[in-house]
Structure formats: C-alpha cells, structure tokens
Amino acid sequence: MADLTTLGLLGCGNMGGAVARGAVASGLLSADRVFIFDSEPKATQPLQALGCKAVASTEDLFEKADVIVLAIKPQVFKATPPTPQRGKKTVVSVMAGIRVAQMRATFPNSFTVIRVMPNLGLSVGEGATAIASDGLTEASLQLAESIFQSCGKTVRVTEDLIDAVTGVSGSGPMYVFEFVEALTQGGVDAGLTRETAYELALQTVKGSAKILENSKDAPQTWSARVRSPGGTTAEAQKVLEAGNFHDLVNRAVQAAVRRSKELSG
Image (cartoon, rainbow, N blue to C red; front, side, top):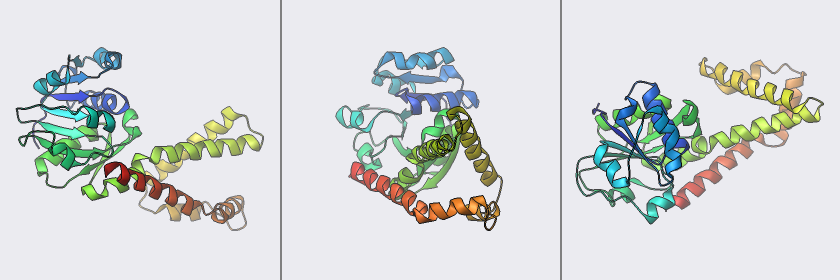
C-alpha cells in the first residue's frame, strides 16, 4: 500500500468531516497530519477542535497534503475546479456525477485520481463506500480502502457500476429513513405514542440488520423464519406483496440510477 503521510479535505461537510474523524479515530493519521479547507470557514471549526489544521486556500491544501479528498458539491467542482500545476498527488473524489475522465482533464498527469461513492453512514463510522477500480494499482486501491475503512466498509467495482452503487447505497439511507418513518406512523395509527413507536421501529431495524450481518443466510430465509402460517407476520406480508413492495423499492433504486447517469453525462 502507498504510504499515507498527510491527508487533505477539500470540503468539511458530512462526508469530509466523517473522513477526517475516521482517519484520526482509527489511528490512521494523527490530527496534525490532516489539513482542511472549506469555502465557509465556520465549517472547519469542529475539525480544528479535533486538532486538524485549517489552511487558507485550495492551493495551500494541495501544497501540504499528499492525498486530497474532494468532498465538495459537483457543481462547485464544475464551476471552479482546483487547478494545481505540479507535484505527485493522489486525489480521491466522493462527488456524484463527476467521472474519472473529467477529473483527469483537470489535474496534472502526475496525479493519481480515484473515484469513490460513499454514503451518509460514513458520518457515524458505518459508511458503505464503493471504489472505482479501473486503471488503479493495487497500492492505490489499498490506500483508498485504508481511508474509507476507517469509517465503514468498502467494496471494489468498475466505474461503469458507480451509478448502480449510487442507487443502492448512495441513496439507500433515505429508503431506510422512510421505512422507519412509515413503521413508526403505523404504530401511532395503532395507538402507540410516537416516541414509543419510533423507539420500537428503530431498534427493530437495528436488530434485524445485526441478524443479517452475523448470518450467512439470505434475507428471504430470515423472513420465512419469522412468518408463521396464518400468523400476524404472514398477514402483514400479504399487504406488502399486494402493494408490490419489492418492486416499489426496485423502481426507486432504478430511478436513482437513471438520475446518476444523467448527472454523469
């Protein structure tokens, strides 16, 4: 694996902040080896409190850091892309819709460009991050993995599958949040207080995810195990089937995939 001696964060929002915290908390880097810049200076304050070093400009960031994570909005990159002219750096992009080819046209040939697609779970150390592996050395892939495994799990995919990743895990937290809200509302409509219903719904999702994480059995197998013929869960499943629940989620994923492709076009 290529050595990670200094890390730069361009953008200190949810994603950038999560990467910085994960790198420091895991012992990957000491805080004083993490350099940060955001166009909104206030955004850097929580990371400065952690010990990260704020710099005055994008140029300073590229000067001080060997690996720079682009955690800015795609439209910001398109409007004012960073244009360092020298050095041998590694640039890691978490931006949706910006392809590696577009970044290579911006950065010098001496730069290594890596595209990743994380999700919001990064902010609590449980991110799901896909790394586009095309044309990268094993050392570069392991470098990216070391950064994002400090705040979650990673997989490798080819860049043409990043849009699919966006539909499944990039947008995925929203599906889970909406499900928890719907389950909570169901409890409220059945007579529970919102507080009680929410606590039960949230813990149910957490426990179910843990079961799957600790098991080699497929979700369908576990679904069958909690479904007694003629019982309450079987009645609930009939409603989900009648409403084409699986198809509805699938269509949501495909809609996100299509939009991701449009943004990347």
